Length: 290
Image 1 (cartoon, rainbow, N blue to C red):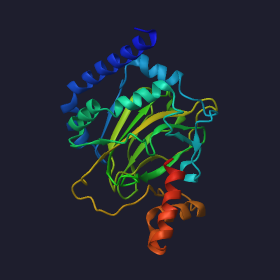
Image 2 (tube, rainbow, N blue to C red):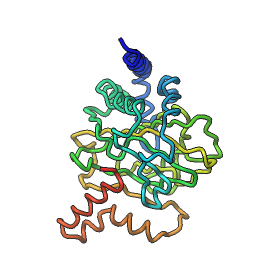
Image 3 (cartoon, rainbow, N blue to C red):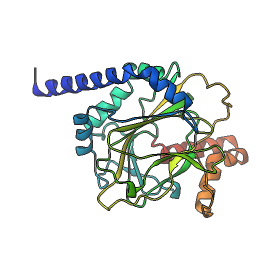
């Protein structure tokens, strides 16, 4: 057996052991998830074996790396993302694959009560994310259907990789009420912390305040999304892209207004279907990397 094989087996064994430890608490997690407000969510600290999480940080590509695509809108200022498996470092790719595995899906089903989950192995909008100083992610709900296969988006899993994160940096994941009148919960993006939450027509979230980190510190995360074939109970069938919203007191921005109008479906209603399909394909390439 080669050293490389030894390393892979050791990595898988460590991940399996950690998953088994989380699975013991799955029923408790389910109660927390289903009763959390303003919408179902769960926070799990020490999510990965610490050694693996630290290696993920050490091998995480810097913002100057050519693998990144910078998001083009003010709503996602200074946000970098990559979904290209061929350019994602081996360890990050391996962890992403593990979190899309059948064993992990079964854990998620127990921990959330959502059955028949399907992983997005193409990482549409997921993968590696990194936000630089001054960056933000405006409050929004995520796209409702997978743009390629039409499955219903049900869960987001965000794994934060930010050692020694300071409160003054900001960057909390904020969960807002459905009327966008108040933030109901703020989750700091601490090292090796996973945030799992249901995605729906009212799961408004983001980190709308610009990051206040030193120039050399970025907000790093792995992002995975999970789907089902059937819609959740009560979900309307109207398909939409990611929809950004303004908070009370936010200033009007013309560029934001145009982009948000396009995403909301207004342009769909005004355009001929053939033209709209072309615009939607362009939108998906720009905003989801596909």
